[in-house]
Length: 241
Image 1 (cartoon, one colour):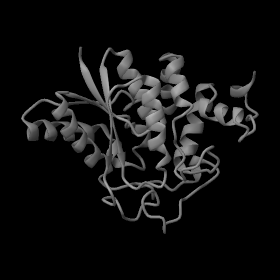
Image 2 (cartoon, helix red, strand yellow):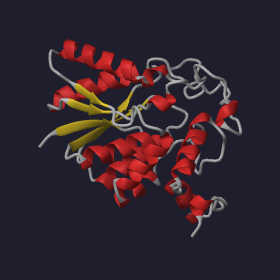
Image 3 (cartoon, helix red, strand yellow):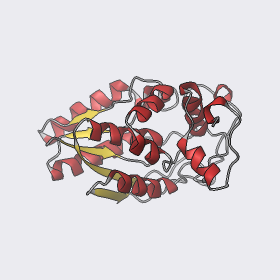
């Protein structure tokens, strides 16, 4: 059976990628990185999602303070920027950008994949995010794939099933992947402040909300929070009974 290693953050996109790979017939392992991120709750989300997917192999790799810097995701003295809409965020590099994060993640993932005899890595990068996150570009992935393969003297494929599609199409893909994927999304985590339920207008939350709104489907994470009595059901057609 063909095998794949999923870079699983515990977020919406990597969760969708995991179930996409399973649907494609891959025997999946997963790796999750603990890098002292503010939203470290996503690591617990990754554990829950792995349980739902019934994966046998899930590695959580602690990286310590390697990414300490100016990003509010890793530097608690920096204020997390929030707005009422995506249009209010400045263009260009987002303050939440963590330099070299995907470079390090994919390089370490290649080491783990190599040790497991796996030649395929799946990651949830998406060019919808490119404007604020340059390490989500297709050109970057292709370049790193080439460098990793050269450095290992072994062809390592980096698959990016979401790279060129809109957030709304990612939502629709997750819906098409079936109820297990949809249930797993209810335990995924997106909010940069690390809190459940998601209530603040950070870049990731607004992007996720827009994706579900444009897809015409309710966010299962929000529905879980409503069921838990932590949120009121949003007054949109997506959440009508």
